[in-house]
Length: 531
Image (cartoon, rainbow, N blue to C red):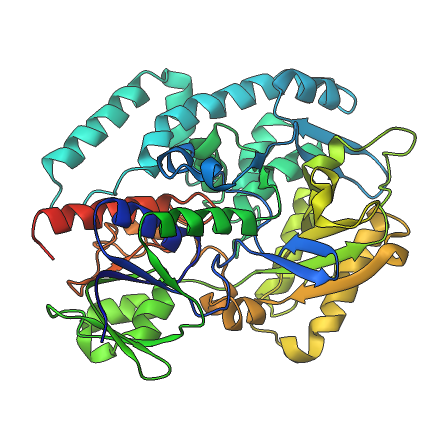
């Protein structure tokens, strides 16, 4: 029986980030990954000889600059590509709208469809940038305890409060109003063009079991702004696919002294409330450590890995009601050439295609796509978030050929008719049919197709319920309430079991912050002799 200071369950990016920081703090750390490769959702897979694509996540969340710096990830081969175009929005009739990192370029684009919206956009962008700067400290801090806030908690909130007061009344009022709002209402206050409204609103429902008219979906825009100052989702990605991020993290971890084991499927955690917790593997092997850290989602951790008799019935009841209904799927394509999209003919579209591509031209289109999932059906007209990473990174496909990564919503984990095993091909064909409306002829370019259903997300990638964020990121499962009220500090009711995954603050996306924050708290507990 090997003994470690820390055993981390799950070699996803947050688990690897936590391992790096803990090893740097002098703790003997082991990472156990059930698959043959580390990375979790940040992996690059070959779907056809010569064609490599980011299997799940296709844009960084955005990755914390502090994490990149602290772990010297660029020194371990990580190169982040940030296109000038954030998102290209398409409409069925051929209208296009490109939103750039540069506000003035975006205004020039919007002027082609609405002078009024072009005038409103700079203030919209600047307001979110200002609010984002106020919220930014929250994502890298440990949420305070509701019952027993510390002096450090009061100090941190005092600084945030001071920054809030400096916003000015207009932005203060906006921040307080926007949090609980439906994102459809927020964008309608700013813009009149449906294509622009829907493109902005999509960030509020990305990965969520919610439509743009659902209350609280504006929170997604505010949290995005906290990460990088913009309400529009990031389009940055790693050269070589997202697996390059995981490879860099693994190298950094091993350089710091972390031991990583793949094909190590954990079946249970025992004795987590004693001085010698053990991780039991599927083959019966036991690994003893002073602390166990779970990078699995909260439902998997507490309902599958821990004996329910070890948990308080009230906590167990709340965890069983923790909401994590999968709503997204992936379709990855190997293409014999670059697809031609409506509205981009007659010009070189390479720059516009280098970011994300949005298909979901109206607010009601997005809402109808969500409606289907409420009744156990995938949408006939889904919301698609697309990247063609080979446009900016030709190494992902043979010369002249491309790969396409398609995030699809909505695709419920539980289907009313049939199941994902029997309806996988139907789902993939439906996505391609919808894509064909915006890129005529794309079907003839398809060399190979990979369909990843919500069931695959659970069975292959370990995401309970197929939820890509380890649980809904709503106001009641957010910040001091993530995953549950009273347990937002990465600790759990079991003294020697911690959380470090996206089910902890600040949630999903390829940011690395849940892992970094959890490692900081655990290192403090080691230093204070609490574990």
